[in-house]
Length: 382
Picture 1 (cartoon, rainbow, N blue to C red):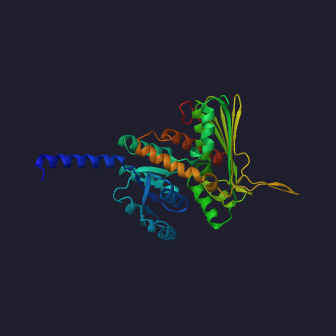
Picture 2: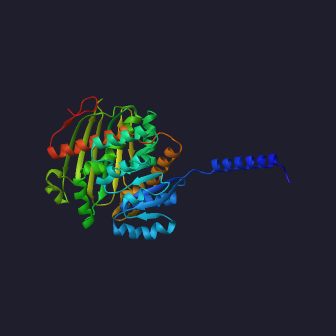
Picture 3: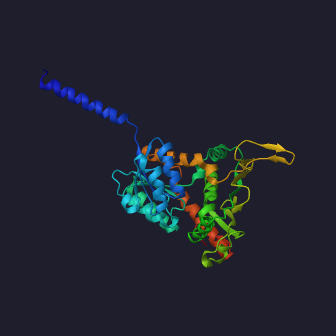
């Protein structure tokens, strides 16, 4: 039998082995999903199946249909499901949440999570006002460890990432005009009629949808070292199909809208969004530079198949935004998880989010008032 000294030495070696083993174990971010409706279900399944360094541990929703869905799709995988946010947020060891609840609850849920030291990936819009967004930024800055990212999914699309790289490399010179459009296939179901009215009351079409185009434009301007400070904006629109949008009083909205933005420095952005497309989801972008042009997805195709017959050449359109950006939703969560675990800079700055929300709200106001809105060189309303 060995002496005490040899036993202590063995214990020390064992302890060192345990520490080395612990360090070699891949770190995992324990996620909860706030709201498991359409977007929340997408995020929950992605985290469950496709994000290696993330583990879905809990989710919540007050909706009976969502809870029934969770009984089949989440609970069998060991995910704890709660009817309230207040219960879910107390889950032991919760590291991060994806906030995919109703838009009007994003600020409340994000703030409560950040104040508990929980990292947040929030669907847009993260807040209803710029003042609320500044409040969240102050919480993040004060904590010096809790992280916040807004889910602008298009930034994680490989085509747009390559476009930004080309701009950064000077392939088209300096960006002058950026044109983008996002047209969703007309859905006449009762749910969609309810959705567009709620979106109108939650900020409007510009804040609900065109903000994605605005954010992408900012990413291209950043890549080209161009100013992202707006000089003036004009918003236009019409309710071509969802006529109930015309009678929302101060929340009047459109189902086809155009936003034009001129930035300090002279460069221009033109954004068109529609909820009434006939063929399918049509999302395309052009960046015109001083020495060339970049085009992304000018002909929206479901795949590479073309059918030629006596009536012409036919291609199938993408059914929805989900089909277009399915891989991007996964990349978004992977990038967020990696930034948190490795203490890297977030892929999307909160300052950029302030600018995109400022522009989107100004466009919505311009549409509703019929007036152009101007900004000074600091980005403040004139």
